[in-house]
Image (cartoon, rainbow, N blue to C red; front, side):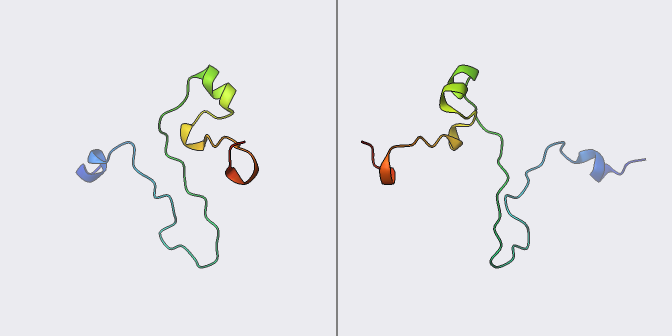
Length: 65
């Protein structure tokens, strides 16, 4: 038999992007939260499904040519 607290827990919960106890001089890659996405044809032309990862190459040193 489940307790009331377990029954009331939401199905989805937010995962912290970093560990609860990050260590000095360690690299961490945060979890990507699912957000908006491009339509399939737009995603194929841009090379990514996720707009937040869409970083077009603008030329040398980030300047458009």
